[in-house]
Image (cartoon, rainbow, N blue to C red; front, top):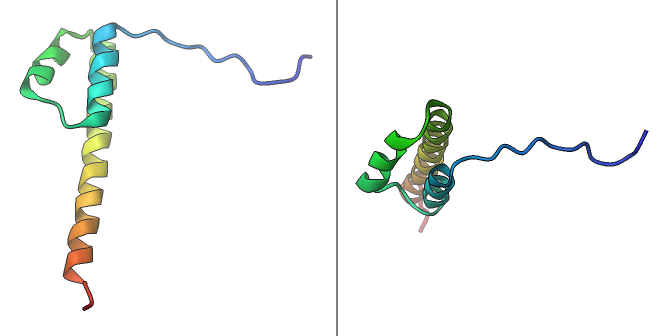
Length: 75
């Protein structure tokens, strides 16, 4: 048996999904990008919506951390 990493099955997604996910990493989606996601197929929509949900959760966590830091500031 060969040793090493098992081969991963890479799934190729459309250029539109790749572009939208790239923009989602940088900033919040614009209204134009929200309309673009409607052009994706069902599987890709689910992937995009899961990524948006994860980003929103992380953004809220970061915001609450900043709010708590400013409330409990010692000085």
